[in-house]
Length: 356
Ligand SMILES: Nc1nc2c(c(=O)[nH]1)N[C@H]1C(S)=C(S)[C@@H](COP(=O)(O)O)O[C@H]1N2
Ligand SMILES: [Mo]
Image 1 (cartoon, rainbow, N blue to C red):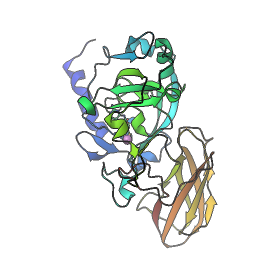
Image 2 (image 1 turned 90 degrees about the vertical axis):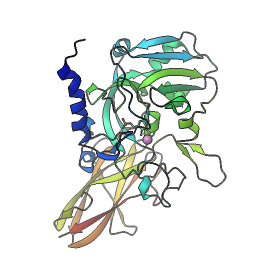
Image 3 (image 1 turned 90 degrees about the horizontal axis):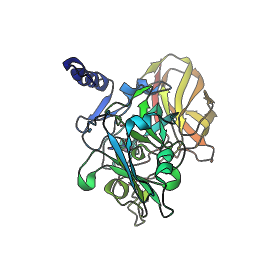
Image 4 (image 1 turned 135 degrees about the horizontal axis):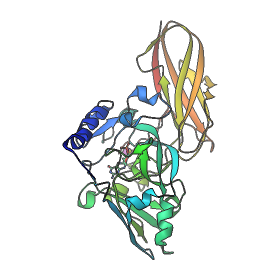
């Protein structure tokens, strides 16, 4: 491949431009939120899609990068990306939410990155089902989990996560090569990342380096010390897995002043691998919840957008709240269970709106 000085310089410039479209939470390792105006779109543009990285971003050579597939398998092999790109390829619209999204509204404030509500985004991911690769290596019957390791972090802090065999073999669990119709960017895991639809973002390992079939549950740092609900009440910490049912108001925006009369309230709602079946809106506190309209056919693992017409908004300050319910009947709580690391905050949010 030819690399001129000009093309070698442009990725850096592009990265600067892209980072300007995010709200920086930490410059290094780079962590940033999706800005509210980008969350108002059906799909989140890559340049505005939140970035959550526990370590500095590795720069992997996309042309020569390989993924070892090994462990308790009959036929281990080393996967070349060109081979992976030949498919079978699948494209899926998937919402990713960081488990720590909304942490700053938990009380007492837990430790961890101070995410507001922007560690969230929806993209179209294209890749090969992990199941294709696992079928090829032939898992031994005693395999209980599949470990996927990233190329970031050192020693025991190497970023690695395991999945139960059933989730690893699910046809929607992808080794993704593309995001929103273009090759993955470095920040989002180039050249190959896992996408685990319906689970909080930590499961979707970026910069995949190695895949290992395990005969015992994985006990690594990012499996046992992080991404666990530790309620500190003496019970064993529970692993963080699927995204809890949640909704968000995108319009009116925070601090926006709206004209009196008819106000269209819009937002989105999602719930792990489940479909959202209902969104309700309450104006001015209390228990008077009214149904919103779902604007799309709800799909599993992706947010659905909704709208609600607020008739006769009177001058003055008002509050708006949205509450989603999924097909299993699970509804957002007023207060999410507190936990030491501040994960899974799906509490109903309050939007304050000034009318007039
Ligand atoms: N290798 C690696 N993969 C990772 C992480 C990481 O730190 N290292 N962070 C995880 C977390 S916590 C989240 S929320 C998602 C974020 O994906 P994004 O940065 O593409 O939005 O990546 C996950 N995959
Ligand atoms: Mo995360």
